[in-house]
Length: 181
Image (tube, rainbow, N blue to C red; front, top):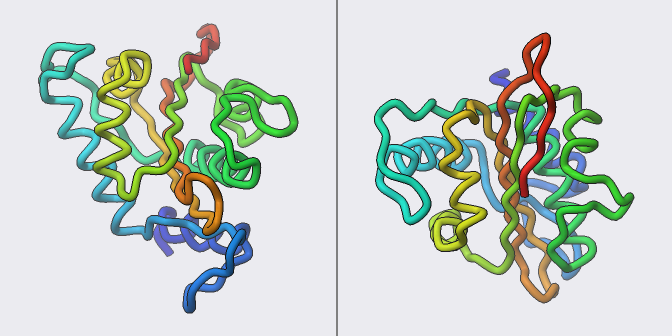
């Protein structure tokens, strides 16, 4: 089984959802399937090659690759903020991005986290992030080579959909870890 398939299946199992039937109000369910996640990464790489309000176009920009540990961390954060029905870069256990990435085994030389809520699809989430200088900077950070994306839906909540993108540059033997919001 492809690693992305295993991740999507794991996210469904962790969320406690079935793949068929509507979700009950308040239950958490993933908003994106495997093919949508793959398209989102392709879309993100295309965005990184275009001029953006926060960065010039660059054909030398590193291509982002799907990273299952970043996806697991993004899924966990999306579930956490959906459960809390609010956006926060600190989870309900008071952990910041660096701690959460270490907990899934991702050693980062640099990392960034983008959050959004209420957007109906990934295009709207990307547009919101591009319109925000700090979120745009994360999307366009040339040092980032890895990405994990997640969307969790909680029907009946204030925002309904919660979007999380985790970006990373893997740590080398002597790298220092920095995390950006």
